[in-house]
Amino acid sequence: MPSNQSPHTSLYATRPGALPARFRRTRVLIVGCGDVGLRVAHALSGRVRLLALTSTADRTAELRSQGITPLAGNLDSPASLRRLAGLATRVLHLAPPPGEGWSDPRTLALTRALRLRSLPDAMVYGSTSGVYGDCQGEVAMETRAPHPDTTRARRRIDAEHSIRFFGRATHVRSSILRIPGIYAPDRVGGTPQPRLLKGTPVLQAADDVYTNHIHADDLARACIAALWRGKPQRIYNVNDDTCLKMGDYFDLAADLFGLPRPPRVGRNRAREQLPLMLLSFMSESRRMDNTRLKRELRLQLRYPTVDVGLMSPVPGV
Image (cartoon, rainbow, N blue to C red; front, top):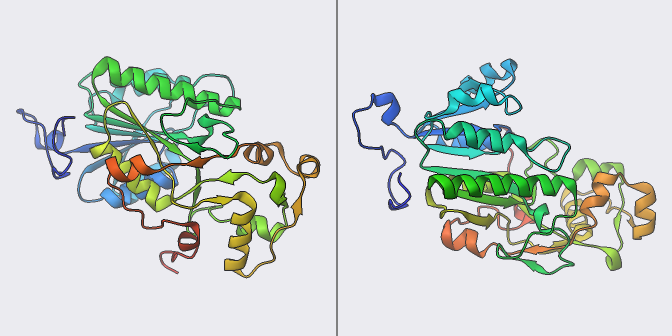
């Protein structure tokens, strides 16, 4: 669907031109087809042709079983990405940056490969809310200037810059989703239950920080909405309506699961007891605003709060 086409247009919409039928059908390429990518594919199954980049031959059978055509390639090997050019009418990029450095050469390599042939109509990149840094509990809207506090978040900012440059240079409708903590009962590590069972402490009320969440299914639906409705070069916060501090979130989860609430400790003791990764999340406090998500992408959350989402049924159980 061209960027000026109505968002109500069917997913079956095709480009004009004397192309073979298999190339006239809407084709969605998923880069980074993990848990959320598979949820997107499930939601789109039967409506579009699904493609996914994979660097692991072992995943080929799994992807095919989900109705996805696997494409061999590696974001760390730019030459292997050339085959992606011209294949997709929409691209969903959910692959993370490398684990070190200050930039994201993977996203740069992907956007360069996509420019080699006919361009997609739309591209959506899954970034992180960590680019806002510590807002000291203030509301973080998409217009707020990023202030990343970690190299991990700085790599995401670099990726966002690559996506926006790609969109401006090619006139491809490119959108960025800033994503907080993803949870779901049917997602590996998708609830606080394992941490509660270990008795991992949380911060005492005086030191606690605001945290933000999104159910994996709602995130998948946001990705789809952005692919068809996202505005050019637009950023969207993708979070639910929950407004809780981290300790209160774990207390709520403990009560829902019938488990003991976690112990509360001061920040100094937390530094002695908790791993650095966990401490980094406890050093940033923000309340994300999702107005743009609801108004522009017209997404109605199925799991508007974490208490609803944590108790959502697990398929097949």
